[in-house]
Image (cartoon, rainbow, N blue to C red; front, top):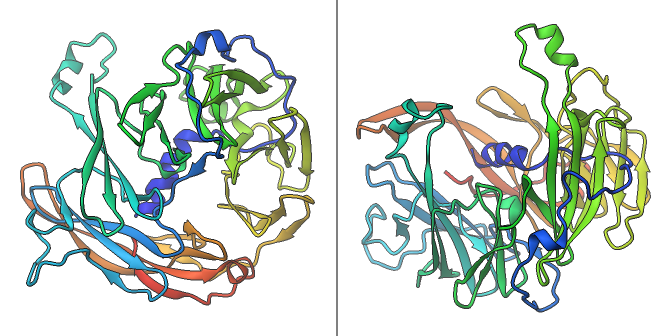
Length: 437
């Protein structure tokens, strides 16, 4: 299911959301401007915008066809009428081969992102497993994988596909949480944690973090700055004793820096040390252009203003966790009408006043035995596209040797709901389509 996959990918990117940081430090993890020199590129001054798989007019989804050729069939959902259509104008077409204009073999690929009123973006990443046998001779047993990425543009009807750029030995990360634009460039995160700026006019790609000396990954964007997390931490030695494993925490520092996409300048932002915090129980995120962090041990939620570095405590009323126990995931899903909504906490926090109130639950969805609240696939002005129901079905897949096999699972259906109804637990859905499949 798409949302479950998306959450798993997000878990790789977000180390949580939490409380008041220690003074910012440039030692160990923070990168200086000198180590991140890039070609100056003056943008249009627009804040970076997170790309989504739809807008007020349409939602774009796809299904993988059950064939050896690994083909994808695009769907366009009209969010006014609720009509789910296949963008094909060939009379009598069965939509199961490359002769169909709605079918592509550029797989694996993520469903289309809406770039603007006329254009969609698709990212396709292929992995070369040809060297997998080399793991036997590798000193550490690692598998030397290689990636090739392709970025395509196409019209809003999924036609007129053209390649913007092809990147050899670059694996772009698929997660929809880390693809931004300002209308002139795309900003993408690579599988090796490099950050790429790609021109929408000629496809020129620039690695903005080529000279970084430390591990980092993209958390989000604030204005025209990308927020990158860096880590300089030591994990405890693995133990076979479950009682010892719970109470062992990493030591060191987790930091965030700001990378300006125009100048390449890198500024120290926030730093958190294991001398002051239980790093396992800190959570960081960027939602709607604002940076938040949670210290689940203290039960605090704070925000930090990038222009001044000022930290503001929003609330200390979140459920607190035992310092010696790993906390549940305190991930913020969205800012809806000024209220911060969490994936796993049954409460809402006002992003301005810090007021905390109980979340009114919607009927729970059940996916393969796992129950969860409806989750957001698309955030619009006053509506949300969410998973509204599931039904059992038998899926047919193709094994590596070309043999078909079946899997019993559940299929998700998406529906529109007003933000007010979502926040107040009113299941007033307008079902529109199946989830990406």
